[in-house]
Amino acid sequence: MNIPLKYNLRSLMVRKVTTTMTILGIALVVSTFVALMAMAQGLSRTLVSTGLAENVVVLCKGAVADAASSLTFAQFLALRDQPQIRSDEQNQVLASPEAVFQILRKKKAGGESNIILRGVRPVAFQVHSEVRISSGSSLAVRSGQLLVGKGVAARYAGLEVGSKLRLFSREWTIVGVLECGGGYFESEIWCDLDDLLSDSRRSYYSVVFAKLRSPDLVNEFRQKVDADPRINLEARREIDYFEEQSESARELRIIGLSVAFLMAIGAVFAAMNTMYAAISSRTKEIGTLRALGFSRSSVTISFVIESMLLALPGGVLGCILATPVHGMTTGTMNMRAFADVTFAFTISWPIIFGAMAFSALIGLFGGFLPARMGASIPIVQALREV
Image (cartoon, rainbow, N blue to C red; front, side):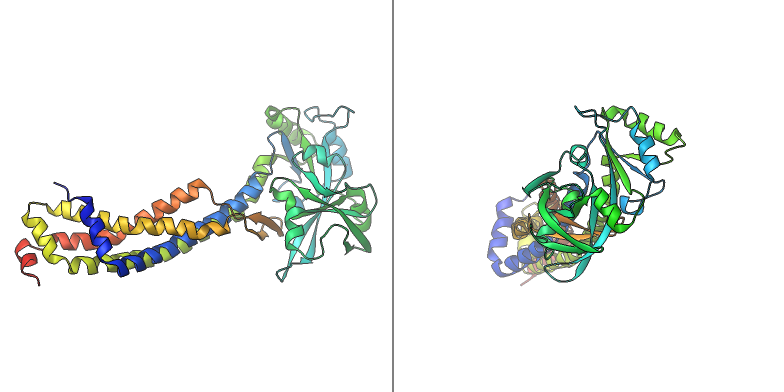
C-alpha cells in the first residue's frame, strides 16, 4: 500500500522556510549547469553548422587547421583539374584557394585576442554559399578592402564599416559585414587574396575549399588527391573538418559537467539536511504510518518522492534563471587555429530536459539516505518519540 502523494505535498508546505531555501540552492546549481551547457552548445553549433555536405577542405598532410597549413600554386592548379569539382555556368571551377593569417586586435570589453584574416577570391562566395554580405559592399580586387564577420564586428573595437585598419605596411578599409547564420566565418575578417599575398610577401596558399558535383563524390575525390603525386595533400569532408575544430566545445562541456557535478554534491547535502530535519521532526508520523500498515519500502519511497518534489521546482526555477543567457554573444580560443571564435549561448530543449533530470537526481540522492533511516525506526520507538 502506497502513501498518498498529498501527504508529501502537505509536509513541504508546512516547512516553508527550509523548503524555499533548498529549492533556491538547487535552482542556483541547475542554472549554472544550464549556462555552462548553453555555452558548449553554442560553440559546437557555431563550428559544426559551418560545414556543407558537398564541400571539401584540402590541406597539407597532418595539418590540424587551415592556419597551420600551406600548399603551393602548382599543387592548387593540379587540384583544380580534378573532375569531381563542380563548375558554374561560366565554366569557372568552384575551388577557392585561401590564405590565412592571425592578427591581434583589442576587444571592446578589454584584452586582446587573435582574429583570422582570410584572403579569398570572388569564387569563395560560391564555394561558401552560406556566407553573405549583410551590410556594405563586396570586395573589389586589389583594393585594400576588408569584410568583417558579424561576430567580431560586435566584440572588437574599431571594426565598423568605414573604419581603417593598419595591416602590414598600409591602411585597409572595412567596406562590409559578413554573415553566415552564426557560423564560423562570422569570427573572421576577409580580404582579397592577391592583396594579402602581396602585402605579406607570401608565395603560397594555406588551404583550398572546393564544392563537388555531389556529396557522394567525397571519397572518390579524396582517393584521387591522395594518389596524385603532383598534389600530395589531404582532403577532408568540410563537415568533418569543422567537427574536428569543435574540440574546444567538447572540452567546455566536460568542464561544465565537472563544475555542475561538484556543485551538485553541495545541493545533494542541502537536500539531505532538509530531509533529515523533516524526518527527525516527524518520527511519530512515521510510527503512525507504520502502525497503520504502511511498509518500510512504502515509507522510504514516499520520502524519496518528497525529496524529488522538493528538487523539481528548483530545476524549473534554475532553467528560468538561466534563460537570459540565451543568445548572449561571447568568444573563446580555438586551440587548433589559435584564434578567437565568436559564438552565442544556445539553450536547447535537450539541455532543459537534461537540467530537469539533473535536479531529479539531486532530489533522489538527497532523499534516499534520510528516507531509509526514517523507515528503519522501530514502530514502538517512533511512537514514543516526543
